[in-house]
Image 1 (cartoon, rainbow, N blue to C red):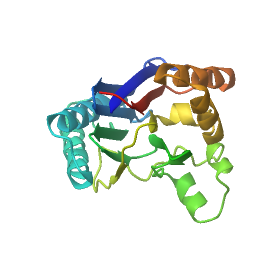
Image 2: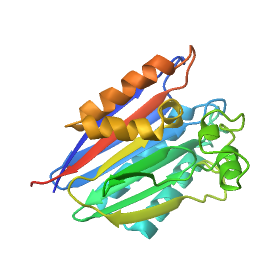
Image 3: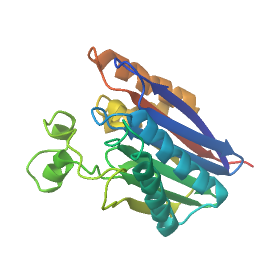
Image 4: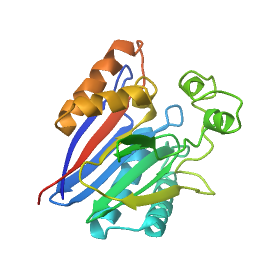
Length: 240
């Protein structure tokens, strides 16, 4: 197995970028993290960097199973809470999504509304469920899936790093040649729909081609003042 990846982050129409992105891809090993500091809570870029560094280094040190990854999220939450002791950082918070690939196993975890999509067996699945009021409305049948992209409560998060209790979720699956993954912040996925993610993937020969096709869609749709947006596109391919 050979892991390849492409990473992109942009401040969008904001004054600075509160997203933090970390990635490592070498041989059959890959570690990827996207963290999105919450705008309006102050020092979101500090919170996202603390969380991303904790999750990334923890996954690099030892490829985690789902339970170990959940424990890493708790450690990241502790890092953000400690950082809140610095004046001016008292309210900082962040979402995060992490993916660890090694051998024949993929393990992921998330909190908030940063997402992971997984392509395997010819199907693209959103593996993470947004921890938001809007997504809860969707799960309860109050709105349709497409309504998620436009609902007024989309930015109202129920879970994040930087507060207690910390309730991340984790999952795992077999890793097969031909699988692909997309990690992204909400500033990206709210403008690129799942069927488009799949269509662009099926035409791409590399993670960079996949990402660039999706980014072209994104740039055509974003309004002035749009949020920071980040993505990591990952391929698992035959080879060593």
